[in-house]
Length: 228
Ligand SMILES: Nc1ncnc2c1ncn2[C@@H]1O[C@H](COP(=O)(O)OP(=O)(O)OP(=O)(O)O)[C@@H](O)[C@H]1O
Ligand SMILES: [Mg+2]
Image (tube, rainbow, N blue to C red):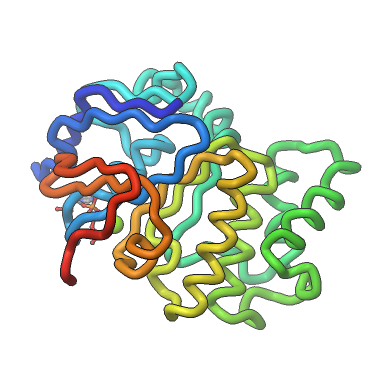
């Protein structure tokens, strides 16, 4: 359902962050993207939701070619993809409930659907009791769970996460991983860039290792493979 064909990306400053990526990710897979800092993991991820365009090559999501999409078609693509960031990106003046509901309001979901859908995902991430709180009143792990709830509330087929546990302690990170595992078990494809060696080694899934803009390893059930 996600396919990259000979993807090459050179940034304006001349840095080549993707140097011929070829990969296929099927529906329902759980994929870790690992590799040293500067390897091109975030670039790989950003090209999947059209935050960045490749310089050449093609990226298909369910047969839609992302480089060929017109800018006005990008919001439609984003409805099919949930994105989770390291730094949560919550709206500070909105409550937990409102942060999640907002994702449905912007896509003009019928009002009657909003409350049940938001309640359902807050329950899934274990935050139903904190729906009225503000992000600043939550721990880092709780804030990340809100951002995951927001990313899945419109039921995307794919959730893409760039170091979602990067700012969290090990125990909190495991709580976040349980949420991703649960979402994956419900059939959602997960693509996650991570430096978290323990998670990759203990919760085994396909591992794609990127170095210097190239896929150097692609292994089902592989381990982290780096000592740092
Ligand atoms: N917007 C940009 N403009 C120019 N160069 C960039 C840009 N974004 C990333 N790069 C460069 O592209 C290369 C890959 O960066 P990328 O962010 O994809 O790495 P990464 O694997 O995610 O690293 P990290 O583990 O530190 O997050 C780096 O050399 C980086 O400096
Ligand atoms: Mg990165």
